[in-house]
Length: 209
Image 1 (cartoon, rainbow, N blue to C red):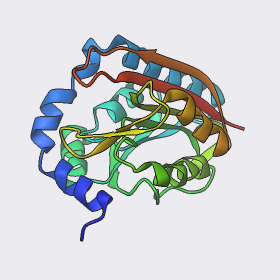
Image 2: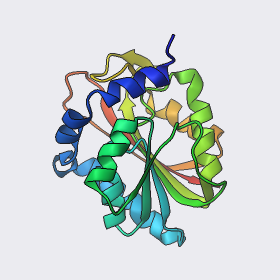
Image 3: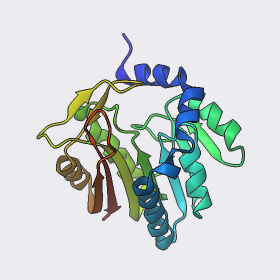
């Protein structure tokens, strides 16, 4: 039987061109997300360590955005088809296939990690291990920006995402996971995307102690 990572990889492999066409320019109509990413990039630049990973980079559009904002950005994704698309779309940038729980990055070397809706397919019991891996690769004072679907309920909610099963999280509970991983959450943004699912969009910024 395939594990959830294998199922997620196969699902994204099958929708690369559609996904890229839908999301490559979407931030132009998402000012909250766009400005949170801009704030993240500015803070990473302030650390003096410009090296940043776009974890779950998909077709690479956000990796390119981070590069345009002055970061030494590279993309990592579970889906080899997404990585191939990203390399073709952005040939000057680096993209590699990788699992989020085993990043091909040296300990303590990154000024920032962007996880833009890339943890949403992870079952709740496995999320602490993913956060621990983000912490492992961050340098002291490094930044993590994680975006996800938020729910007002007390527990994570599994739902049928258009590509693969996903989870929405109470924002406070997600922030507590960041704290438990050794990060200090210091900014959050919740906003209503007018989604038919009824979830909020959530963005949490945290710094490694």
